[in-house]
Length: 143
Image (cartoon, rainbow, N blue to C red; front, top):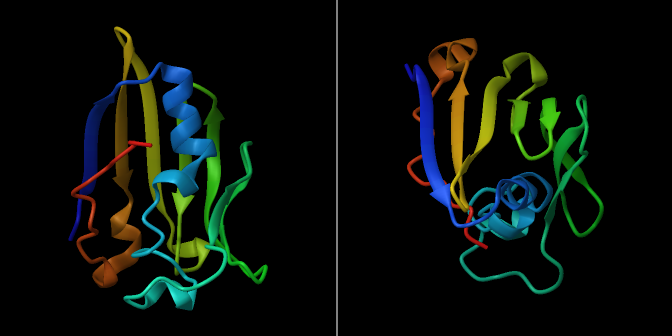
């Protein structure tokens, strides 16, 4: 069973910009071609037309959703802490019900002219034996 996933990286952005890119511009870095609920995204060839997008409701209690070009929405998470420039936490249940949510907390800390981004994903015990090792080997905030 997965205990927790913890990743830290430093990005060449001021703290507010790093938070903005991670939290408000998720569609810019999230790998929708590999991790999407839109069926067209699961083929090897890019689908013609608009791409799905990720929407983030920027407040505590807000949702993180994938929205398909035809308007269908899949809710991935519920935000539990929205502190712009400092911290974003959410209960993550993409592909499951909220009763099987895991917890993600991302903190943003000044590191000179750059920002240290620290992500902790835990709560896998809530998934019981269905918890598989998530593919969290890479966290990229590159634009």
